[in-house]
Image 1 (tube, rainbow, N blue to C red):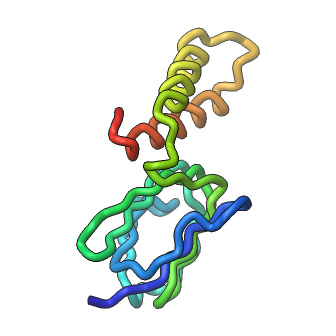
Image 2: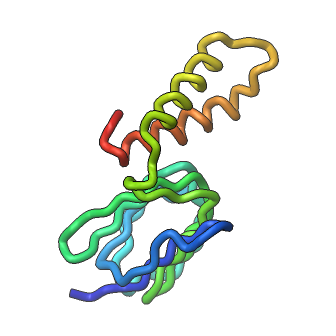
Length: 133
């Protein structure tokens, strides 16, 4: 089966670098599946999950925004943050979700709602790939 290089990097480190069969994620244009020899594309990424297929197995990586660059033989994701399921502290993610929910429900004047919504999305994204919802 044909493969392509996938690199996922953050400002701190290279999170993933392997030959893969398929990458799927949610880009600005909507959900996208990328196979080898895909047409070139550059797109921003919101808080999302990147699904990777390699050797018939699927791996998920939690992304907290960034950019996707697709070339026929390579996909590069420059992410603000990226976490493998094994790196996620589930209890911390659950606490973050509860805090964000409380901020959104209480509707205090000094709450930055966009920031609380994004914190909620990040926590849910992390919990989804860790197996807890």
